[in-house]
Structures are given as structure tokens and as C-alpha cells.
Length: 187
Image (tube, rainbow, N blue to C red; front, side, top):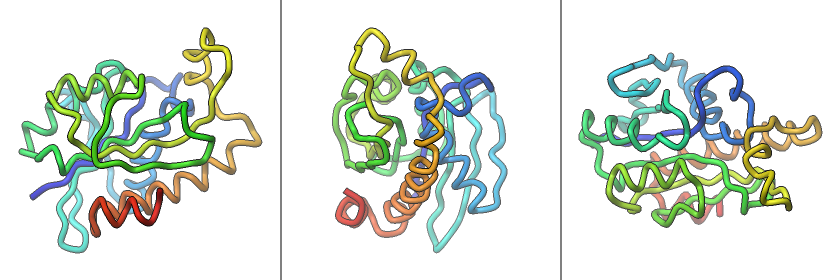
């Protein structure tokens, strides 16, 4: 049984440190923690690597496609490695959570997140785990796109560094202890 953790984000250096790329940033931090290099794979539309730790085989990955097409990458990984949907964890930003909050759930809708919507449509199910990272919210709905594609303010960066650490702990809890334990500890 293989587990799959996918951090959503946009490709290109231009988007590297934006709010929308927090999922990808967490996967990159996890790769550093496990001292692995994520390999670009054009066939799977992802950068990914296999990890074995504490008797658990898992893949860390992020899509090489834009956020709205994330599902293409996720379905390619699921098919190649025969990952069951319940063994998928998608990490993404969330406008509805206060900056620095995290929430892990075993399933759910897309909550207006186009990356999650793409994953749900591509795999034909919303029955997969998701870890949502609060990035704060802007009141003007016409400026949401600019907001999610903006970098964190200087005073927010220390909050985000702490949230990345908690998110990694949450991912590890999901991997080694299961979704219920992760929800009890981190929600």
C-alpha cells in the first residue's frame, strides 16, 4: 500500500512564494526533512519522489501544471502507483481559514478552490484527504485572484514558517497514525 501526498501550487518562479503555492512549499520542506530530491517527470506532470519511513511507503509530489489543471497530475500519479483514493492527501491554501490555521479532513467539496475542483473531477471522487492551510482573506471578491497570487507580507512570514512546521507534523501524523489521529491532534 502506497500513500500519496500532493502539494498544490503553480509552476514558474514567478509564483514560487505566493499564497496559492503553500501546498507545494510544504511538500518541498518535507522533501528537505527526508533528504530526498523531487524529480521532474513530464509523463506524470509532477515533481515527485518515493519515500520509505517507519515501514510506510509514500510519495511526495507537486504538479508541474497550473493550479486549475492539478487533477491531471494527481490522476497520473494515482494510476501509475495504484494509490487508493483514501491514501491520497492533497495540501492546498484556503481563503476561508484565518492565516496560520490548518484543517485536515477525510473528504469534502472543493470550497471554491479550483485546484481541488480539478482533482475531484479528474479522479471522479471527493473521497480523499485534504489538508487546508489558512492564508487569510481579502474582503474585495474582485481582488481574490491577485490576493492568492501575492506573496505573504513581511509580518506574515513568521506565521507561515510555523504553519509549515505544523502542517508537516500533521502530514506525518496522517502517514503513520491515520486520519482520525491527525484530525484529533491538529483540527
